[in-house]
Length: 362
Image 1 (cartoon, rainbow, N blue to C red):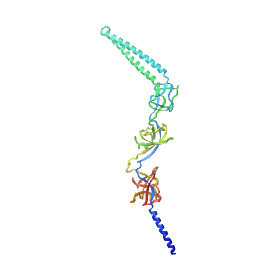
Image 2: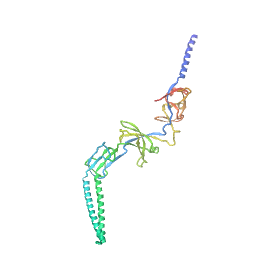
Image 3: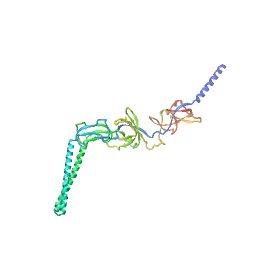
Image 4: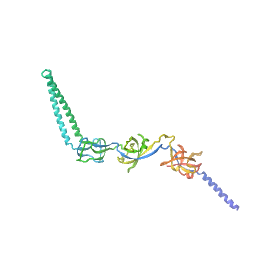
């Protein structure tokens, strides 16, 4: 029996040493520094990429389409020929106005000579005052006819020039609306040219959102394309809305774009909405969902607090007031402060006062 007790004594000593070693073991943990989250919430809406300049091109005059110089997808420079109308009738009018102008100029020269002779005769008392005034009136009429002929000549020249349609700015032909030999009227769209530079994003927001955004606000744009990318931009235009619309149009000017971004591409626009009355000091904090535990007392987290030993921290259990669960974690209404080190993993292995060593969660 005595030997039996002597045999148990070393086993108890080994057990005590094992417990002391376990007690002194420092568990490595991941952590998160509590920082003010972005004030407010994020809302996403569908959008579409559009050209900053998107113009429907049309002739000022009507006629038959003689030649279309571009096709859909063509790149054009400012002044490049887009289309040409049959100008035969306009050339005839131009030639008529040119002949009328020459005739008016000839009549003007004759009138000037006649008025000059009449003035000499009148000064020499060879003709009456009424004859002189009659000649003066005929001269004024010739002047009026000359001005009219010049104006008609200018109009005819413009009409002839209007049969040529040119690109107003550099861009890409996005649509061709008319074919050759078709008869078109003045102002009828012929083609659509879109600016090749500085594309924008158009979207629309409901009335619950429009009051919480303003021009100059930063937004994030996620483009849906084979070369998907996330871009940033600012709100450049806000519509006050109309009675016929239930949403408010918004235009975003992108800070930077790539060659893959083309008009018509769909995207998602993410707005960071400001909450009224909130600032950095009382902003709702958000921490990772894995950092929040729950027991009979409610929700809790473990805060890593410094100890007297360098690089060794103590896990301190704190009760917290939890708000909504969002994609980036729980809203913490009370219980933590900015700068706290919240342990984000291994809560089931922790207890209040447990010694831990911090590891950065990459």
